Image 1 (cartoon, one colour):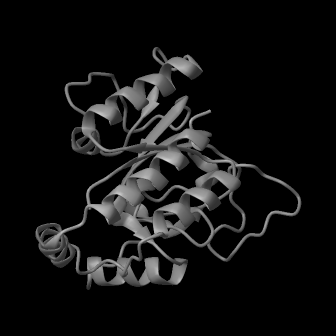
Image 2 (tube, rainbow, N blue to C red; image 1 turned 135 degrees about the horizontal axis):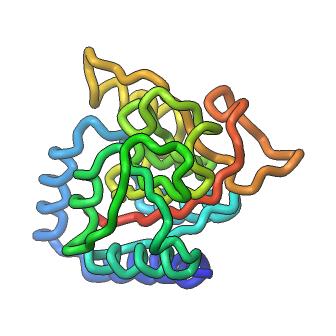
Image 3 (cartoon, rainbow, N blue to C red; image 1 turned 180 degrees about the horizontal axis):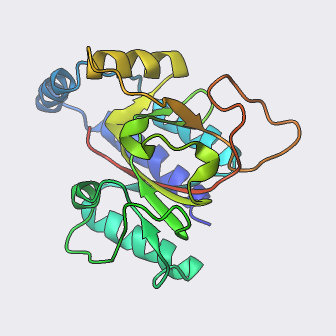
Length: 216
C-alpha cells in the first residue's frame, strides 16, 4: 500500500538533492563515503533500482528520512497486521535503538514460533531486490526456520549493486572474522517461475517489510 507513494517520494528526493547540490554537500558526502569505505561503490540511481526489484518480488518498502518516520512506519505495520500484542523475535535488541526513538515493545531472543521477526541485514541487493543476511542477523537458523513475518531495518549505506559486490563488502567489512550462514532472502511471492540463485535455493516465502532509513 505504501510502495507507489514512496517510490515517487524517492524520485522527488533524488531530483531535489541533485538540483540543490553544492560544494559543501559534496565535501560532506566525501567524508561520509570515507566512513563507509568498505562498502561497494554506489551510483545515483541504486535506490530506485532496488525499490523497483524489491517491490516486484512482493516486498513492502518504506523509505524513512528520520528516526521519527521509522517509528511511524513501524507502528502502522503493527496496526495494519494486528501485531501489537503478538510475540516478536529479535536477536539483537540494540538494533531497535539504532532505528527508533522512545518506542517500547516486548521482544524475545529464542522463540522461533513468534509471529514476527525484527532483524537487520548485511546488504540490500539492487540487481534482484534481495536481502543479504548472515549469522549476525539470523544466527545459525535457515530461512525456512525463522518466522514468516519479517520486518527488516536497514540504511541506505547498505545498498549494493549485485550479490557478488555485497559478498565482497562482507569480506572486507569483517576481514579475518567472516560470518557464517551467509544467505539471501528473495522469496516474497513464491511462484513456480521464480528465479533463484545459489543463495536463495531451498528457502521459503516470507511476508517481508523493509524500513529503509536514509543515512547518506
